[in-house]
Length: 157
Image (cartoon, rainbow, N blue to C red; front, side, top):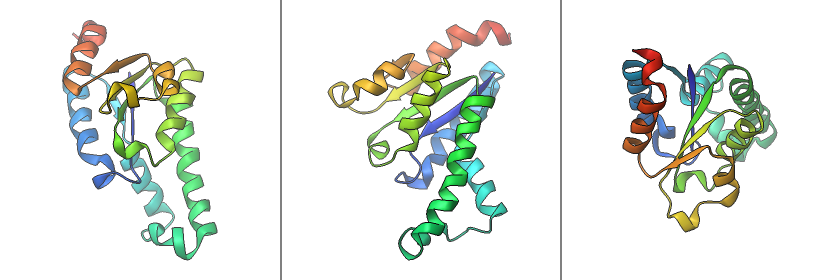
């Protein structure tokens, strides 16, 4: 099984690399699942396109910036549709200013792929749209891991 680790990047500290790295290790050791980390995927696209300063383009050269981000968007869409079996999403304050996570969850829902959402906002601040597109909503990664263990552990052992 392959999980796509969805969540804020553009407005998150370290692009959300820390939680993804920790969860990837857990998924592999506990369930035998692999994961696709969009932080790593984006770094590959940056390298391939020599776009190390792409964030500066947002103001200095918006067309170039949009063209580059479009490559990232297309890659993420391909992963959600064609490679991932399910999504794990961290939904927190950093997601609100962005759009990618919203789109990934909606696309996974359309593709009938489970979306396991860890919500760090108050329940009243969680969008109804996001709730409706999520298969399960958890208040912590501990709750998520407990659920995933009960759902997938027998497949691995």
